[in-house]
Amino acid sequence: MPRGLKTLLPKQTDTQAVKATVEANAKAVADVLKESKTASAATKGLADKAETVEQRIKDYEAKLEGLADQCDEQLEEIKHLLPGATAAGLASAFDARRETFMEPSKRWQVVFVTSVIILAIGAFVSLLEVYQHASTMACHARESRICTGEATGRGLRI
Image 1: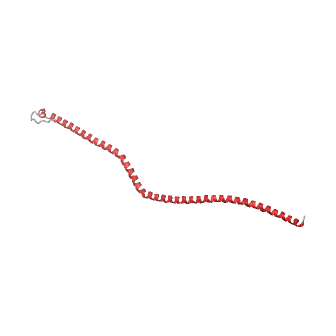
Image 2 (image 1 turned 120 degrees about the horizontal axis):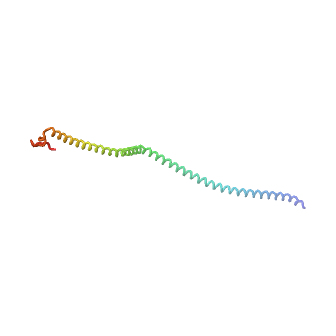
Image 3 (image 1 turned 120 degrees about the vertical axis):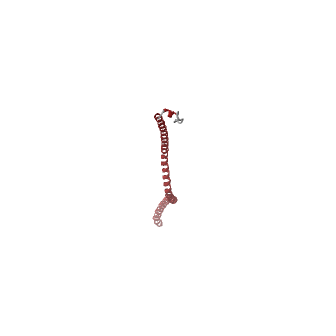
């Protein structure tokens, strides 16, 4: 072999080795690039989701703040109306309790008036009996002529 070829052969082998190393490195870089693109796409998807979640959180916080304000307003309104509601509740309870006493009151009033009427009738009947008894006794005490009215014409009339 010629001498120049002998010197070129080890260089060619070195060049082929370097070429094989470069090709292996290029393949490794391509694989890493592919993995990087996949990871980048996944990261982009996660970033989009994170952005959506952040927007939802902001919306929820705004809604929560609005609800808290509404709750405070309603609480103040309730506190403002509570004394009136208490008074109305007490008035209603008093009226309901008053109604429970109305029926027995009416019943006892009827019993009382009936009793007074019965007593008045009893007193009147007793007075008639006393009057009749007194006139009968008076007639027996006097002569029967005077009682019958034959003598004077003014006898007791019953």
